[in-house]
Length: 219
Image (cartoon, rainbow, N blue to C red; front, side, top):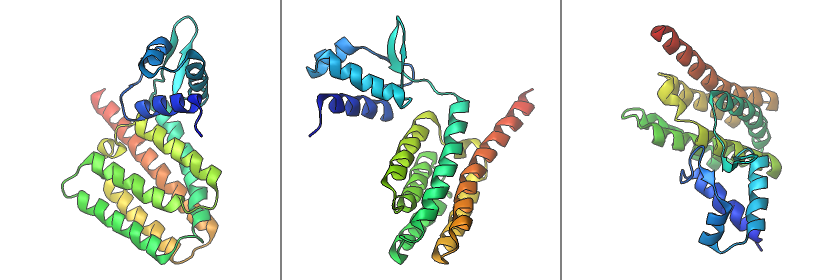
């Protein structure tokens, strides 16, 4: 049974992730308490938990607010995801059935079709669905929970990376096919892990190089 602290935590995190509370939004405990009829202590405990996870900042003499994220935070999250997802994909390889792989290929085909009339949000959602279908088959619940948290963080702090790196979307779909080929062929775990990790790092590299080129063009 969920505790009052759990209820407060879920409510706050849900509002952060759905955009109700944007970066820098001030969280006033008294106001939240009046809205929900939940006392101060559960709210304080939930905020400490969210602070430990990096979702909010508690500033002395100011109070709590939704954390603000910069480009460096996006880069760090992508690098962490590359390592976590590389490992999870390798672990999932033995658990993926032909039906799982067929489902992932179908999602990747939908991503390819979406390129014709490019919708960054739809493409991004399909991309997350593709990766989630694979890493959730890893026989490690803690690793899956970490990935879910980092993907949520990535969704919150970024605008779709593909809108900032022309051509990356097409390359990403091709890399997905290559990764599925490795999984279908039962390649060794190290090869799969490296391929999955490099896929994430390729996006990071493409966005970084594009940002540099824009900076040079505007200089």
